[in-house]
Length: 154
Image (tube, rainbow, N blue to C red; front, top):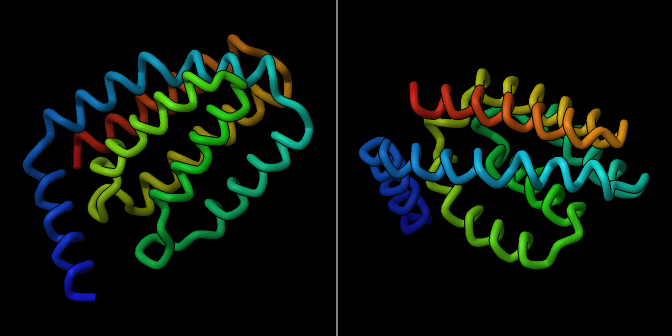
């Protein structure tokens, strides 16, 4: 328990003192994730949408500070990579998402970020349901811009 608390405090300090690292991770996300969302829109089948819906329901029910919102958010983005149906993309984003944990320490997981994240995820999911790759790409871009602005502001 003590080790976990120490690691948590260390992670918070790293994120607080490493705004450049966070911005660099966000830039990489902005390059990759809109195209992943577009590919997912082309490849999504009903069971994929059901899996995203389950993640969205869990995210909507989560309470900041009591739930691991970062892991829920990560699951949504990993599911998109699975839906894109490209193993190289999945392997690449798995490494990226390990780095993303730096952006998801407690100070960056407040109610405002949770609401904005959920709204962005819903827009991406809706574009997938419509099979609209361009709308999925744009929804992911808006989502990342919005979340990035909150992360950098924090």
